[in-house]
Length: 147
Image (cartoon, rainbow, N blue to C red; front, top):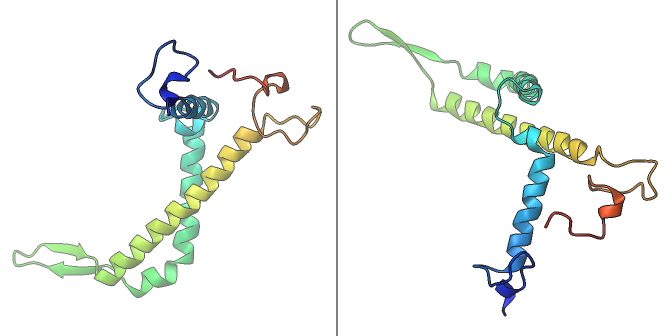
């Protein structure tokens, strides 16, 4: 197949298949709409909202696993030089790893819900097609405007 010659933005062949270029352009367009979720600016409202959400999720998961964490306390050991250090047992480390995994799963779920909400906020109930799931104007539906 000669898909590398079908890319409409170039009059010559491109290095890989045109559908891959189109997919890349579409993903870039999606990133533009969801840029607040990819923004690393620590002063942004989106970052503060994320940190608040993460803090609440961490508290929630830690409370759920409190009994398991209490069963495996951090032990204190005194070394040869008289220094005291805290040591986690392998069971405690396993429980903490489970807690971090659970926090990650819950955060992924919550952030995905927020991203869907952000993406779908452009849907207008007053438009002719109230089931629209894209953020652009309905007149652009039949055009590849992102090309």
